[in-house]
Image 1 (cartoon, rainbow, N blue to C red):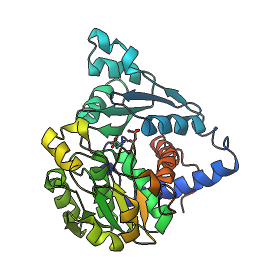
Image 2: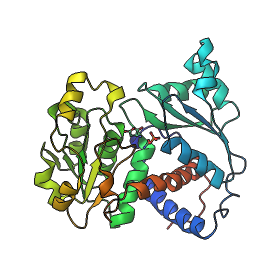
Image 3: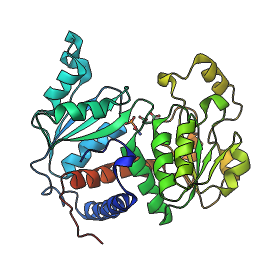
Amino acid sequence: MSYISVDDRSNEQFMELFKQTAEIKTQLSVNKGALRHVCPDVMMGMMFYEPSTRTSGSFNKAITFLGGMPAPFDISTSSIAKGETLEDTARMIAMACDILVVRHSGEGTCRTLETILRQSNPNISIINAGEGKGEHPTQALLDMYTIWENFGRTDVTIGLYGDLAHGRTAHSLIKLASRMGATIVCAAPRAELEMPQEYIRYARDKGAKVIVTDNIESVAGDLDVIYTTRLQRERGASQDKIEAFEAGSGYGVTPALMKLFNPKGIVMHPLPRVDELSVEVDADPRAKYFQQAENGIYTRMALIVSEMNRPIFAKA
Ligand code: ASP
Ligand code: CP
């Protein structure tokens, strides 16, 4: 079963993944080699057409911790330079693989590749590692896990703050969090960067309360989570929008905003950060973005074992 959108799994399946992740973390904290027997025969292809540090690195670590085999692919030295198509490249990378992890700028790429690759390999599982400005569903998995880990529940109030128009992590998170009982505050600093209506509609259809504001300061005290994102310059944020964003006096998570923020809240960021999240915030105990990034390893391990139908621990 592929994982291309958060819609591909039920809330119950997410809860199961969270519990498996918690168990995996516990096991690895005692012995890093404890789970090497789980997927020794599994080959995972990695096809990243866009830059990545965390997602590619954590998938690599995840399959290695499970004893499986990562099959990386370097776009800069590949035969794409000779004009090979995306489809033919995917056929080669996916050859002999059980799982193919795909990052690409084109929305719909993962579904297209799934159709093509299943003609020769009916069991292959495609995992979306970030697709244009559409979704980044494994990020939403680790984001919701981090929220659950910190609060013990998912019906929290989340302030999405940044470029909500073009940020795929915010798109997947609003979908998943609204389904899991969260209240959503969309706090783009400029109207041009606001969350697209289709996602707000989705969240409201799932019964979530959604508030739209351009003033994070006025709501900061009531938020459990500030989830900030960088301006997605590479995704069509126009020069006007960039200037508007940069002119946004005081924009960003700064020590000043932290003073207004709920003392029991947490700050999250999918990373990489640029200048919207001050390094001075790193020492604040509410800063959880590095823990969040590390959770990417363990949640992706849980996802791989569920894709391969090899649950490590008995269901609760
Ligand atoms: N790393 C995340 C993504 O690939 C967030 C970002 O790049 O801003 O979507
Ligand atoms: N969060 C995230 O997707 O990071 P990378 O772009 O570095 O993979």
